[in-house]
Length: 137
Image (tube, rainbow, N blue to C red):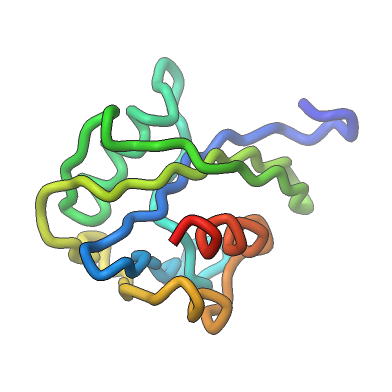
């Protein structure tokens, strides 16, 4: 719990970079909170998992992408209070992976140039991560 009595939720996210320097965004599907917004892929860190293990699992489940811990480089993190919880989200960069990304859970995906990231509506926790990605690429 944080100081306001809200549960702290740990979510790992990944800036997946293709050979052309584009970043993968996934659109939150209908029926989920923040549906329709675009986000960096990832997911909730489960009990007993490290953020890196979470990303390896989530990238495979959601996108059909395989990677390794050594290919995940920590970049920055987001700390954002929503109405009913506080989100803590480390962001990793991944340039080395196997497979071709597809939306395995019915979500739309799009490869985006870093300078175009702001053209996509994102959850409040994701938006502050954009300058770090732009500085990197």
